[in-house]
Length: 145
Image (cartoon, rainbow, N blue to C red; front, side, top):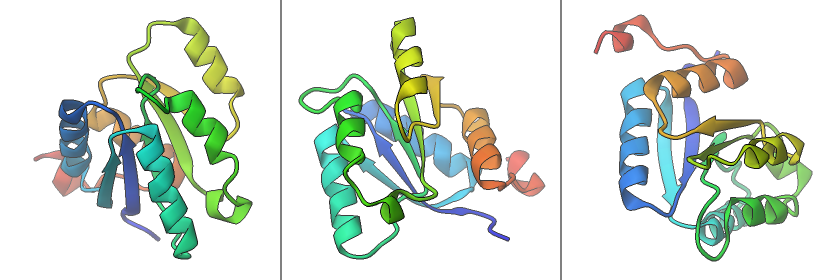
């Protein structure tokens, strides 16, 4: 039984948000490797390189919606072009500050999007997502830290 995720990808154009989200993920002790991309295009390039190298890529992606050039929706359109084998088992959570209820509805209809969450990302939300989708729970000695 796995006790940690191998790899997580944070996609957000805001450096402070990436920093904070990385810290929150590290606090859980549930992820071995944390990667980040500062745009939808950089995330797509990262995934394409992973697929070309025969790597499995990240287990979990937290994706911002509102980014310049390639936003979260455009990312998802392009994501569909990856092979089914590469996409298998991956969980994508849209993490957005968007107040627009249409974004939540659109996310529910978008292939490969597992869930929509509001920013900010919290340790508790990370724990819930990892337990729900991967069956990995926080070890009690880490919770008390």
